[in-house]
Image 1 (cartoon, protein in one colour):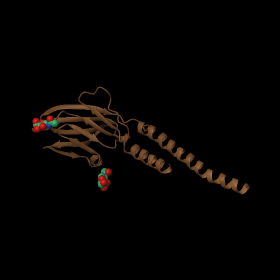
Image 2 (spheres, protein in one colour; image 1 turned 90 degrees about the vertical axis):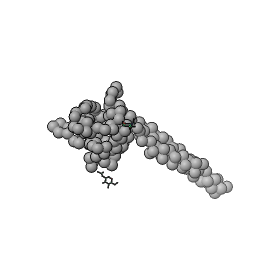
Image 3 (cartoon, rainbow, N blue to C red; image 1 turned 135 degrees about the horizontal axis):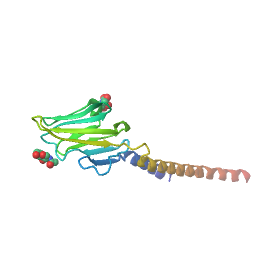
Image 4 (cartoon, protein in one colour; image 1 turned 180 degrees about the vertical axis):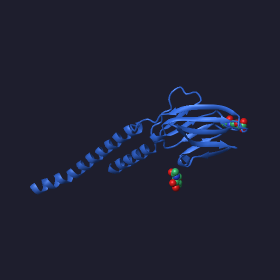
Length: 172
Ligand SMILES: *[C@@H]1O[C@H](CO)[C@@H](O)[C@H](O)[C@H]1NC(C)=O
Ligand SMILES: *[C@@H]1O[C@H](CO)[C@@H](O)[C@H](O)[C@H]1NC(C)=O
């Protein structure tokens, strides 16, 4: 029984830890806002197909822009501070950010050019990162606490039984 509960809590914890929420956003025709939770993976479609374009993707801060990535000659160059958790897929025009941080929230702008430098299009969108009260945490913590309480009760009952027996024996 104890082993089963241990297995249960192990499985439960592993399961809760492995759920990384995924958010898909379409920046081409935004209908709802793009709002992943912190720690989530977000896919943002910026173009249907970016093959053959020169791209510049910036985060817009008051007074200046931060260059997040550029695409030139079919090669993606990502800013150092984003490199570990950012990918841009040219053939699907999709930006993927893993482990989204609250600092990632803000406005972003994509500019697309033809290889000869001719401006093609500009697209802006806002990324909202939801507060820390993510759903996966809401669900997993009570579940883990519940199983822990079960184990505790099981242990106490298990420990009390032999005690009571020895008590009767000494009385006899
Ligand atoms: C990216 O990952 C490498 C290896 O995991 C690490 O050494 C480096 O510090 C990371 N860079 C950033 C900006 O987080
Ligand atoms: C994007 O366009 C290129 C060139 O036109 C094409 O080879 C590629 O298959 C397209 N990718 C997708 C996902 O449609």
